[in-house]
Amino acid sequence: MRKRFNMKRLHPLRCATAFLVCVFAALPFFTRSASAQDYRAKLTVTVTDSTGAVIPGATLQLTRISTGIVTPAKTDATGTFIFQFLEPDTYSLKASATSMNPSIVTGIVLQSYAASSISVVLKPASVSAQVTVTAEGALLETQTASRAFNITNQTVKELPVINGNPVLLGNYIPGVRIRNLGIYTEPWTVTSQYMINGGLMYLNEFQIDGAPNDAEFANNTYAYTPPQFATKEFSVSSNNYDAEYGHTSGGVVNLSTLSGTDQYHGMGWSNFRRTGWDANSFQNKYENSVNGTKYGTPFNTETQLGFQVGGPIAIPHLVAQSTKYKPYFFFAFDHYTELLPRSLLLSYPTAKMRT
Image (cartoon, rainbow, N blue to C red):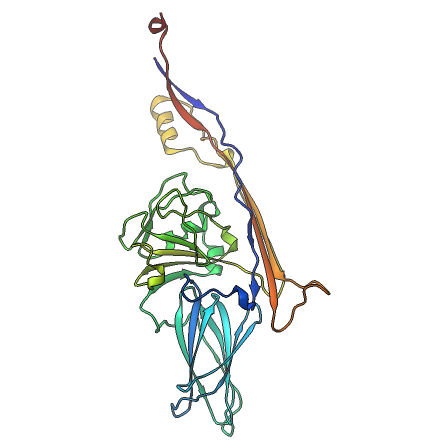
């Protein structure tokens, strides 16, 4: 005899792990070597005069807008300097030289893996005053053949993401398909259903801030998922990436996390799902109409609460902010609880079989 039991057995409480990121900007001992995997950008700056001649020894000041950190430099004999290991963010650039009016370029947007270039033209001091140029959007990449698609922080916050799982943002990227697995969309679900440019699943590499984020017990699956609103940028490098990412024949998926800035910021979020708010399933509606049954909406309760806060670290007489050393902190916490029923099909011997 066989009977089908629809048991109201509930999953245990599940919580997403607290996510803590402490960023200490402008501390040289935190700088990674060039041989390591790196999601950060680089910017090539060339300074010329109005005739097109390069200007060696021009003074450059690259400022990260969110933190106010200034990186000084000087152009070489070819009038060029390459800023490396730049965090994805918005920057401004000031160029100056002897007997020349300074020029400022604002709104320089650098994305993950970007290798961009920009030219700055300085005019003689006798011609005009300081020149300010505003860049629009991300710069065109001319230094590399790698191709990556980026989703910025503003878009990350505005796009609907199932269960707040930022890894699922890949659904919005051209050339990327994530196979739907129904309930396997929670932030703790360790799976990899990415197919990039027609490639096979389980052949991709996952990273957080350039560090490996692959689970140990499975092939090329992501291990940890930060909260959606703590994700600064989501990017997928699909082809022609550098040899440093050559650990897989698929694509490279990177999540860049937010960091503290020179101002205090915080936010909170919530997401609720209740059985009474859901529509009945198609299968139940069909059974009710054909067989006259009265199957109700499947039981499902979900609660997601989180918050994040970040800013500068300045403790009087202990940790002081200075123009050279600027420590920051960032903390994000995401609590996820979901209660689901599980249907079981059990078989047991009949009374005649037991005698």
